[in-house]
Structures are given as structure tokens and as C-alpha cells.
Length: 413
Image (cartoon, rainbow, N blue to C red):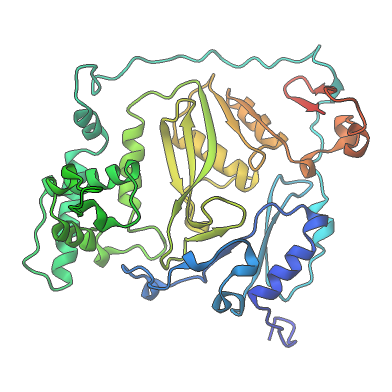
């Protein structure tokens, strides 16, 4: 029963996906994300699922029956007229006028838009660069550079928590040293460059394998045993409000170490996916991505690929400041502040994040911004731009430029 006393009709995930795909042409839906139900502390487990979601191939019509038949609710993220992005938490039983919500546009800024760049002023404060800190030296070895980020303190934390977890599971003879933790991390990093179908192949002695560097670093059974008990946080002090409590110490430590190097002027904001096929409430399915199942990270990185800040996405547990700019704007502004980006920097992002209000906010902070803009965020009347259907008839190479003094929009055919 709902709040009005009427019987509530339940919808399956399959029915919801069908409705969304029928509305796809009208709404221009970019992404469908399927997440698991809200989980309490009793549902948290250290074990991965034996029924891997790797069986899912192709698009949503290949989802397993156990997922398609499950009861679901629909949450939508649309553009609103007064707010750049509005989160709509609407149960699947409610009738929402999705077309009217999706076609709303951003309201115009107080400054009038005009054609050309004559009155444009895009100047931001000069960026002040800093020298390399003393913790880095041109003469240090690669391992010494690695230890700046993955330091002894973090390694000892892993040792303590891993031993504590092993003892709590009944293995009181298990003890791991920080040297073994470094060996395990080294093998995991090596496996990312030298990829084999199965983990145990790294210890295979056949001529076409026989990887001595791995075999001499750690025995296979010992590696498996350490990996089984590997832990970063104390389960007895679990924060049930944080879905990612068990890996939070690692992110907090590495994000602090990433900032030892002063950030460059040109940075980008984007998402990254860590593949994962086990059971977890923060795992996501994102249609149309090369990696469709896993944990999503919001990342701030330099133009050379150096990571400044990585914030794992976990819905309401995501540790980024909430603003009125919507999910994309919250992410950019939150990473900007956590990454300690200074005035004069220039940020680049894709159309998921870009909005007029976000760019105005960045300008007020003395930071430049550039990105592609989705069509449903364009107010053609306010921007004095040709409608898409008319502009497509223009000759190839046609460019339209408009500016309001602070921002510029360029369209190209």
C-alpha cells in the first residue's frame, strides 16, 4: 500500500528496462545503471560471489533471469530548468511525465549572449607553479619513488589488519610481514602488465610460462594465503554508514600522497571503472561501457596522466560536497577542492559534467573550464543559436560563436 491507501503495483527490472528503452528516442537516455538493493551491515561479506556476473554478455536483454525478475525501483537523473541536474527518486509505481522533465533547459544567465567574441574576457589569474618537493630526487630508485606513495606506515597498517583478520577467522598461526606485503603488491602490479588468463599460471614452470621473477618473489600457496586474509580496516569498528569502509584507508592514504607533487595547470575530470564481479552494494552496471560491472571512481588527473584525486562513487556515501550544481557539478567542484587546485588552473571534462552554471562557478573560483555540452542543456532561444535541425543544413565547416563576456559557446558542423 502507498501513502494514499491504494494498492501498490510492483514492477520487475525487466519491465522497467522495457519502459526506459521505449522512451529512449524521446529522452536521449545516455546510461542505464543497475545497482543492487540497499544493504545493511549484516549483508557485508568478505567473500566474492561464485556466480560471477561475467555471464552477462551484450546489452540488457542478456541479463540473467534472476535479475530481470527481481522487483525494482526507478531513479532518474534529468536536467531541470532552475537546477543544472536534479535527482528524482521516484518509485517505479508512480507516473512521471518524463518527456516534460527531459526537455527542460537551463535558464539564461543575467548577462546577454551575443554573436562573436568581441566583448569576451576569458582571462583567469596566472597559474603559479612549484618546484619538486624534497621527498623526490632524480637519483632515487623506482622502488624508492614507489615507497613515497606506498610508504612503510601504510604497509604496516595492512600487516596489522591482515593478521588481525586472519586470527579472527581462526588461523592463529598466520603472520605476514611488510616485506611479504610489498612482494604481493609487486606481483599484482606486474600482473597488470604481463597479463595471463589465470593467476596460477604465473607459477607455471612450463617453457612458455616460467616467470622466474614471480616464482622467486613469493610461493604460490603463500601468495594465495596472504590474498585470502588481506585487509585494510578493522571489522569490529565498521562504519555501517560507509559502503566502502573496508577500502577507505587506502583511498585516504593515497589521495594524501598524490598531493605531494604540486598539480599542473591543465587537469581533467572523468570517471574510471574498476572491474568487479562479486557481491557489493556499491557495484554498478553501466550500459555501453567497455567495463560494465565494477566500482566507479571520480578522478582528477593531470594532462600527463598523473592522478591527483580519486573518489569512489557510492551513492549517498560518496564523500564529495553537495551543491546546487547537480551530480556532475558536485563532482567537479568537489574534486577541485579536495585536489587543492589553485587559481589559474584549467579543467577539461566531457558532456556529463559540462553546464553553464558549472563554468560560471569555476570562473568565480579563478579556474578555467572547457567541455562539450549536451543538447538538452542548450537554450537555443537564450543563446541565439540556430536550432539543430536548421544548423545541420549548413555547409560542412560552418562555425557559430557566441559569448556573454565570461563564457563562450562554439558549434561546428
